[in-house]
Amino acid sequence: MNVSIGGYSFNNTNLEGKMDVFGYLETVKYRYKLNVADLWNGFFIDRNTGPIYQLADESYIRKIREALDEKEMSVVNFAVDGAHLWDPNPDVRKKLHENALVHLRASVILGAKTVRIDTGGSYHDVETMTDEQFEYTVRIYQEFAQFAADNGFLIGPENHMGASLLPREMKRIAEAVDHPAFGFLVHLGRWRADQEEGDKLVAPWAYHTHFDEQTAVSGNALDTIAILKDAGYKGYWGIEYNAPKRQYLETERLLGMVKKLLADEADRGGNA
Image (tube, rainbow, N blue to C red; front, side, top):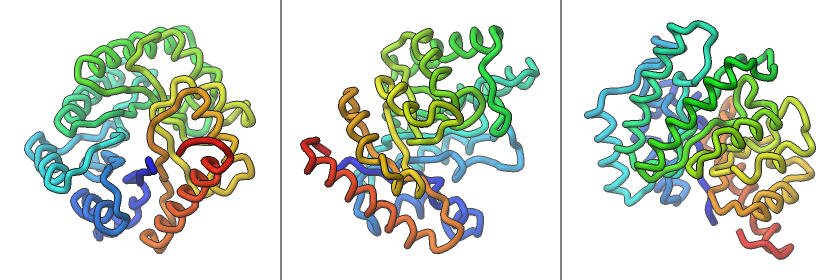
């Protein structure tokens, strides 16, 4: 089954000083028997420099790549925080753009197949984009998508913050960017509007997915999997749940739930 474990699932373990990125790779490979990493830059950034997070230097990124190669693992997604596109302050916007370029170069070193860089905006006050924001967002994603195409990966935002939490805004961005290397990391069910049809609206552009505990137990999880697959989705079904405690156990539980969902959907006539 094409399943993965998002690095953020071990955020609390990382904050407790009990896991670094190399520990994450060991855990995914040998505890959960997976050959893919679903990386999150939170394991190798300086969180004291937020909201524009400074990435570890290139030599450290190359050590991560060496560890991946030693374990014969590939990176199905690299989720990037602190390098989103939009900020109303043009000076901050410029620094975010520079930071995004650093992360794009790191994505190439890591061999990431997909990369998530967010739209920007608030996590709380969700509004449609202004004309200025929309035009800037489309232009930068077109720039990033061309870089991604030149280096063999896909890129785009997650429904994570700002207007990206509105599926019709996501669809509008995708149609305007209009690039084959552009798509979405769809965190299933995480919408602030059009809840029932949100996943369906963005399904044609999905390049990666994340389940959390809530979406995995929702009554329409099987239908959501079918909707994405009917739209042509062939990527990984990731889990991302930063459990408050017992993170190894909770990750194992959620991974099992998602595997069962995929098996149940296959029994209905799909192909997980």
